Image (cartoon, rainbow, N blue to C red; front, side):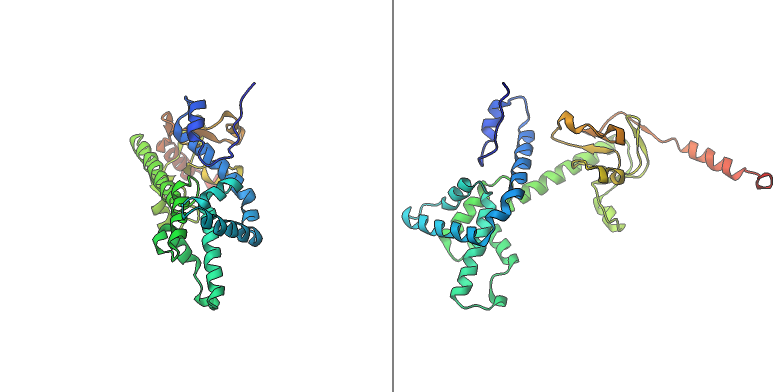
Length: 278
C-alpha cells in the first residue's frame, strides 16, 4: 500500500528526504512550500480573525509568565494551531502595538504604521518589548515559507534561475530581451525573457516568451508554449500538449531557428503581384 505524508508540521524535510532519497532536496522543499502556502491561504483568515488573535495573545502572555522568560512560546503556539510562525509573529506584533496605542490613548495617525511593522519584522531589535522581539526573531528565523528571510531567499532563487535561463539561451545562440528591458519598453507583463526571433521547440513555434512559473491555460496563449519547472514536475502536468504547450525542467537544446530567407521570398512574391490582372 502506498504511503502518504500529511504536511502537518513545520520541519519535515529531513523526514521526506529519508523517505524519498532519490528526489532532490530542492524539489522536496518546493513541494512542501507549495503545500504549506496552499493550506495557509485556506486558513489564514480564520487565524487573523480579531477574536482568535486576541486568544493567541492572551495565551502568549500567560505562557511567558510561567516559563521563566524562556523563548519559543509564539513558535509553540504557531505549531499547535498549524500556522506559519512568521505570520503568527506578524499578527501578534500588530496586536501588541494596537493594544499599546489604546493604553496610551494614541490617535490613529500616531499609531504604528504597517511599514513600521514590516521594518520591525525585518529587524526585531526595533521592538520595544525585548522579549517579544526575541520571540518574533525566532519565528522569522525558523519559517521556511513566509517572512522577511524567506522573501530574501526566494528573491535570490529567482535571480539564480533567471541567470541560468539567460546563460542557457545565450549558449544556444537565441536572441532575447530580459525583464528589465521589457519594463523599459513599457510591457504590462514582464516574464523573465522575451525572444527576439521565433524558434521551433518539438514542433511548437515559440514566437514570444519563456517563463519559469507554472502554466495556466489563459496565460499560455500570451506567454508562449514553453513553461519551465526548474525543480521538476509530475507527469500529470504535461497535459497541455493539445493546446500547444511544452513543459520542461530545463531549456530544451533541440531547437530550430526561423529561416529569414523564407520571409524575404514571401515579401518578394508579394511585391511582384500584377494588380492589373486582379
